[in-house]
Image (cartoon, rainbow, N blue to C red; front, side, top):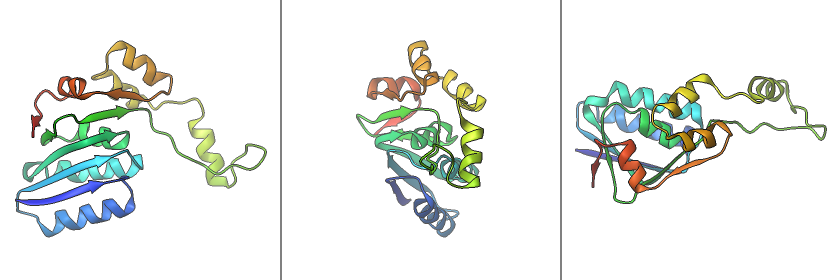
Amino acid sequence: MKYHTIDGDINEENTQALLEFINQNEGHGMQIGISSSGGFFDYARFVTNVLNQNKDSITLVAVGNVYSAAFRLFYEFQGVRKMTFATRGMAHHSYQTVPLTNNGIGATDEAQAAICNSRDYIRPDEIAFAESFMFNEELEKFKQGKEVYFDFARMRQIFPNAEIV
């Protein structure tokens, strides 16, 4: 068994390190621990895709906190999942930070396009994601753009097949 951890933000650096680990250990059993407050949604989606392509040889272990993009990654992983005792989670709809001018306009054309594409908009796939497991009161918070936290008991409900380690 080979081991790797994703600690901190899910970003370019952590994604590159994970890809190198998977490429170097193809054909071996791998256990990947994740403890993250989130990160970049696009990287998390890419990592989820890579992990799912290798799901038969990967066990994903939530360690401590799996928040935001890390929670979505853990939720959408299709292989064996485990959690450490007292693991907590958090979900919210994705957003991005864009530079603004003093007038509240995007500082670049790219920033302005991001604002126009995301203002007052929650992507339909995010609503479907939330509706797949959230209780009504959680879902309402989610739809309001608030963070929805899950204690260990709730994590066990959301992930009933995850072994506790």
